[in-house]
Structures are given as structure tokens and as C-alpha cells.
Length: 153
Image (tube, rainbow, N blue to C red; front, side, top):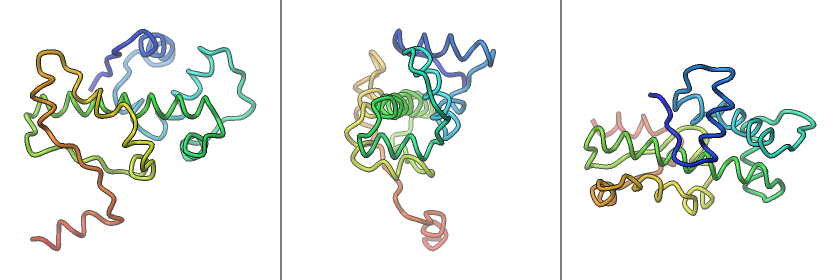
């Protein structure tokens, strides 16, 4: 799925990433490697010199503990972008039963994610906003969610 920016900052970020990747998928941005890429590009656009590269886990931790404004901005944008992509998916599939968010990143964000712009961006679809407002989103927090599904069979 091709990522589509929703504001001037995301457009600037995408323009910078296009120099290296002619096609920018949502997965390139909404992933662990995407967090690292967003961090580097936001730093570059903000003219912040990075001393050393940080991993997605380090960026996330710095955002959560408030020790790095750039990490906080990166993770805030990551959550917002995830909301855009998840909302597009929900609208495309007519996912009335809801969208489930799992993986190794978001469940660890806790309140940071809940207070982020995720849900706002999930619903921000113009004339379809009311439709999306009715679709629930769930955060998978079980350590082994597949086992819960298998056990239910």
C-alpha cells in the first residue's frame, strides 16, 4: 500500500524519502525500520545533527520517558500515520467488527498510544468520518494472541 501524506510535514518527509526510495509504502514508515527512518528524516528536516543512530526501541523509550523531543515527535507522528493507514484499511474493507492493532511496537506504548492522534487520524476521512467513528479499534496486549485464537476453536 502506497503511503499518502495528509499535511505539509508529512509531504516534506515523503519528498525527502523519495530521494532514496521511489515508492514509499505504508510499511516502510509504519514499522520498526520506519520509526528509525522517520527519526532520521525529521532530524534532517529540523537541522538536528544526530550523534549516533538509535534503534526503534530506543526511540520509543526516549519518547515514553520524555528524554528526547525528537523521539517524542517521531513516535507521535508514527501513531498518527498508523491511524491514517488503519482508517484507510477499515474503510476499504468495511471493517465494521473493528481493527485490531498488535505487533512489537504499539502494545508497548501504552498510554502514549492511547493519547496519540491515532484515533483522530483513523476517523479523519471527510464525508466518511461518521462511518469510521463507528468502527472500534482494539489494542492486542496478549503475549501470545494466536494461542487464544487456537484455544477458541
